[in-house]
Image 1 (tube, rainbow, N blue to C red):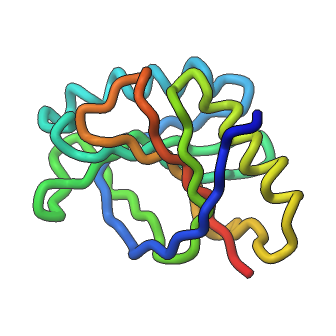
Image 2 (image 1 turned 30 degrees about the horizontal axis):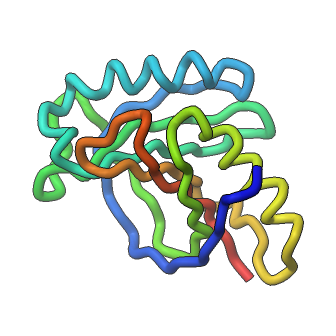
Length: 149
């Protein structure tokens, strides 16, 4: 799991449009890809915009996972719901490809968080994945974990 680097960034709030699934750690490997397959056709220009995978923890095992994108001119297209990412400090980590997503999350939440004392998890904000326009599973993407001093 070496090779991951974490930087702290301050982000502005962002409003997105998307769809969600309620899932668990045990079912996420099936539920999250299926959600993306349902989401992409709902937003024809998704591949021309950055897209976000947003995790809102409900308890230690269950969470809502959103597939979302920047809505055109702040509008929420029909069939999609509005979801926000709050402003604040986030730990950012680049992941080389989709196959490494589990390693990236484990590194951030277990290795990195435990290895330093300046930052702690901000449980009031969601974590999220940020995918570039025209992204594919072999390309790198970023993970963001909400943190506070």
